[in-house]
Length: 164
Image (cartoon, rainbow, N blue to C red):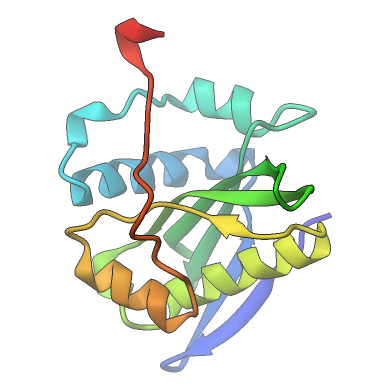
């Protein structure tokens, strides 16, 4: 079931909704913009075919929320479910949150995060986790404003590429 949230921001209707297969071109565009924002535009290996297989199979590996204004896709939040043994509950891992530059500071990110919080509550999740670049002061300030705790004593670890 697709649930959509509508916000009215600066006189424009912002729609937050679940992505579908027809949205793959817009999702790809936003992934490339996010990679460019993060300073790693050549790191994107996603393709429309991979996204279709992974996001829209019977049991999706991940999910995408889209933000739209007047029918134009302006942002996304990608996420998947995780499990906390400490809480003995599922949780959500927010993989990417991105809003096009012209729409930042218009509560679009806040609307995406609100919808993600609603999903977490509906699914009985114990928490939402994500990372933010230490150099992304604007992002850190945004996350703190919406109530996030910025963990200072943990570091992201990764195994990838040849090591796998």
